[in-house]
Amino acid sequence: MTVGRVRTVLGDVDPATLGRTMTHEHLLIGFGRWRREAGILAGSAPPALPELAGPLTWENSGLARRRGHPDNSALDDVDLAVSEALRFMRAGGGAIVDATNPDLTRNPHALRAIAERTGLHVVMGCGHYVHGHHPLDMDARTVDALVAEIVEDVTRGADGTEIRAGVIGEIGSEYPMVPNEVRALGAAARASRITGAALLIHPGRDPRAPLETVRVVVEAGGATERTIVGHLDRTLFDPADMLALARTGCYLEWDLFGDESSYYALAPIDMPNDATRIDHLRRLIAEGFGERLLVAQDICRKTSLCRYGGLGYAHILENVVPIMRRKGMSEDEIEAILVRNPARVLALAAPAPDPAAR
Image (cartoon, rainbow, N blue to C red; front, side):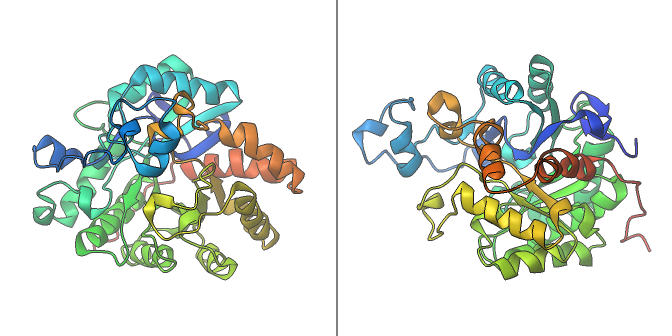
């Protein structure tokens, strides 16, 4: 274990070399992996509109973004991923955390190819997503086995390769958490201590969910200062709740920049726009939590890519940073969010004994 270095798919690197970093993206992703591979995943309902009956294109992408399309949720084209990631690199980006874990069809060799072809640092994820995407034998897996799987991915290599994960996540849960999600998150927290890798959480869509996940992490022996709680854009709306989460010592991640819809996942959630997200960040900076803030776009659909009329991985660098400056954020505050904070949390901490081994 290389303490103080960041583990990428091309090897361990100095955190100072990362540059501007998006801490929650998906270069490649495929939902429902285990059920799809077992041949039991239900087929998609036929499109309600004739415009969506054919392939997903730039022309119908706006409609697909609102109504859905069977091809939208599969990012499996390495050449397309390279093209889109190069836009981020040319905009001044340096590193992308690919939060795709095995449940979401992680592909270590493809991620390595993307890193080699773009020159970007790519940090790969591990662990388990929400219960509906768990392996079919999840009920039979012990917590110790889940811990060992993550430790293997971080320290030796993932999926039978020598390519190692550098972050534990995204670890998913709904609200309230089901037992297997509690077990998976507790195992991830233990593995975070054992490996020194940071823990990245996808909480349920409820304002109570972030604190619940932090509680599970702490009870399992994990460290809040090594924990990132993501998707706050669609989870916390009251500044008091944001402050309560910040006071736990975790990192707070607004990772849906660019999603300004009023129909988020067809759920009754009023999404903030990017200016409002920046206001949340500024408020937390004023409260003294500027060193615990992270941002990203969580691109996981074709319609988020430039090829299909989306804003792409460079949206924050190209469009949001100018608004940050307009709204009064200093260059140092912007640098903290985009460069220093990601470098700090992604750098491997000193391994600690397994809290369950007493």
